[in-house]
Length: 213
Image (tube, rainbow, N blue to C red; front, side, top):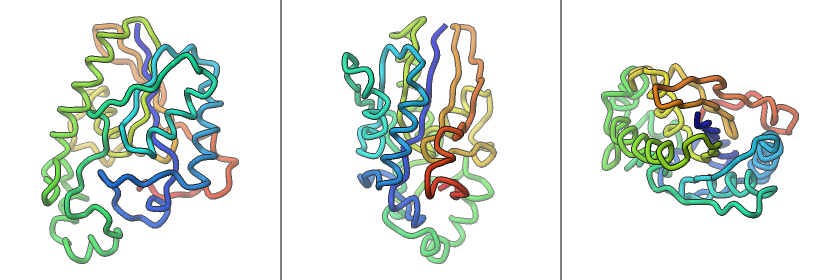
C-alpha cells in the first residue's frame, strides 16, 4: 500500500490578488511561507520516504517546508506536476480575463473539460502528464509514503482521476492554499481519505475565507 500526501502550495500575492499564474514563477508571500511551515508540522507524524515537487518556486518552497524535519530526504523536481499552462491568461487579473475572453471564460466555468487555454494547455493534457508521473511514483515507491507539492489545477485533475471522475467534475473539488489531500493505492485502485484539509492553517492570519483561486 503506497500512501500519497498531495499538497497545494501556499499563498502567493497573485493568489490573493486573483491573478492567473500558470507557468509564471511567483514565490510564496509571507502568509504562504507560514502556511507551508504549518503544513510541514501537520505532516511531521508521517514517516515520509520521498518528496516530489513541481519545479516552480511556490511549490518547491512548500516542499522544502515539508522536508525541513527530514534533512536526509532530497526534494525531487517533477516536471509533470508543474502548473497548467494558462497561455495568454498568465499574468492577467481574473476580472480582465473575464472581460477580454468572456466567451472562453464562461465555457471554462461551465465546461472546463472542453477548454484549451489560448496558446496553453487543456485539462486532458494536464491529466496525461500528471498521472503519468504519479503512476511512475507508485511503481517506484511501493509500500512507502510520498509527499507531493503541486498546484490547484493539477491537484484537482489528479483528485478527479483517483476518484474515478472525468475532468467534467473539475469544479466539484476545491483546493485551497496548502490544502492536504491523502489517498492510498494498493495496486488494485485508489482509496481517498482526505480532500482539501486546511485545519492546520485556519489559525493563521489571512488564511480564512480565501477564494479557491
